[in-house]
Image (cartoon, rainbow, N blue to C red; front, side, top):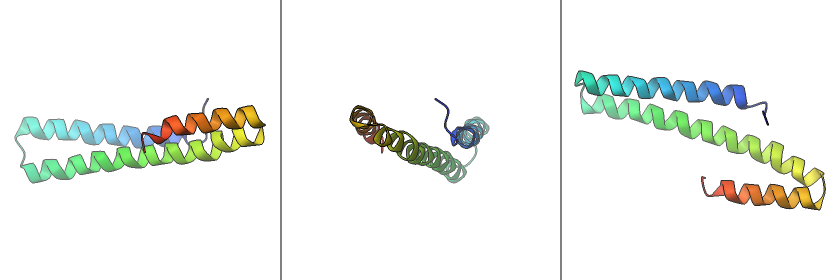
Length: 88
């Protein structure tokens, strides 16, 4: 199921992918550790922001949708959220 946030999520993950490719190139070039750490921090931040966006969208879209559509859908949505929560 595609959510409205998915295009932005893909954009954020592509940014992280680019940062990670840059880190690999920097390692191969023998760049200083401080430069590597800075770029790895950028990768980590990009992934964290993408994960946050995905979870916020899930809470708004899936959990809200489940609650609006009756007890079984709500239970299913809550169970899915509990499974997702271990990645927070």
